[in-house]
Length: 495
Ligand code: BES
Ligand code: MN
Ligand code: ZN
Image 1 (cartoon, protein in one colour):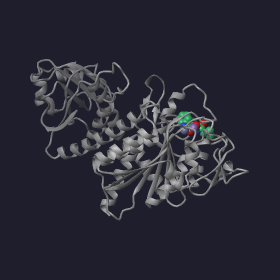
Image 2 (cartoon, helix red, strand yellow):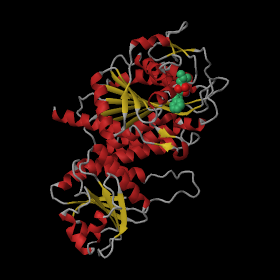
Image 3 (cartoon, helix red, strand yellow):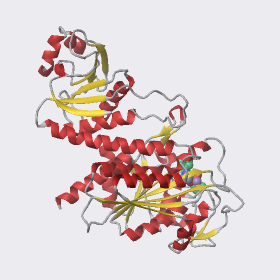
Image 4 (cartoon, helix red, strand yellow):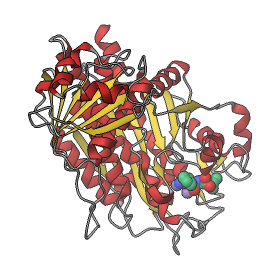
């Protein structure tokens, strides 16, 4: 797909499909030439009852007698003023129409949108088009056809607008590509997307963008004392991997942000076996790891002026004769002994060692991403990710990024009161805290291993994928993370 920004009036658009966002039902003067060329058909369409006044309403039509390549027209109602959320909604409507059409070229006129900056609008539309054009084809004998659309141009009215539209385009593409990379990895079946496969993909990504990468295998994990991580992996024939990525776009002296991902490529529950229904969806238990890789892709594509570290702990959680059992006690890299009361609470067992390991990068901020608890879905549903943080400034920055992108997150507490639930009679800590506040106690478990740095945890159990007829990975929380890192890069640049 090819995107371009053109300083041209809509009547000059060299495209088959023309999208005209309009604020209200009256044609602005910028469209009068096109209206004349179409013998007044355009103004008639805009003022007709079929074109609603509610933002997001559309009216599609052939474009009679407009000349040139133009075949089809889509009017999109923007409402009076468009805010960031409105821009995303508009972008969604436009992207779905363009991707659903059988035409190969489209022009989107950006002159008719009021309120949101051109930068924001161009980013939203670009991201939505990339997102909507994703298809999972790897295992389909007759895959859904790829979208016909190959050329998209944005039409701007003033010379000064080109730059803002370009900046938005670059951002939208990078986030869209990052999300689709995350979605593809997560959608892959667990017999294809193994820990080894994830490590290979990480190394490939690193080669492509000139990042540093390392992959640690079992003997090295043993030498590091990662008894907790290894206890999860040992019931599987697939070997575990600890993957690290390093992107250096910032000052040499600038401490990095670290992203830590849960990469359980299949969570059967282990000896505490899960029920069969819906168990296939536990292939998505590497959604945190996939989001780390997707975010790296976006950050590298944009060349953000920050330093970023990625740490992914990846393995399978399987039952076996040599698998961990309820009652087993293991020793983490930090030296904490953990009583495994339920082998299905495995995410925290691999993350605690990954989080301890991450300290060696002397990060300024650590954010872990994990499909950690079913309880988080009970608390927040599929709308918001659960956000936990031991630092208010970090929490606020992440909430702001969530707000700006619509990739919603909601802050949850980490009060010490909850630590009571993790008491063990036989070890330093238990790996489960009972049914009450299950998402909180999981986060509180992690909090014991993150005292030495600014840390946030995103429980993405409810947001990383969709179930039901539209089953598939969402690419979240890549938009939130990229926005947070973008804002961080801007701030650092000012200092
Ligand atoms: N990967 C699951 C969490 C999960 C479950 C995410 C369903 C999305 C949908 C995690 O490893 C898990 O099994 N957690 C247990 C914890 C419990 C045993 C304390 C859970 O949530 O039931
Ligand atoms: Mn589990
Ligand atoms: Zn899990």
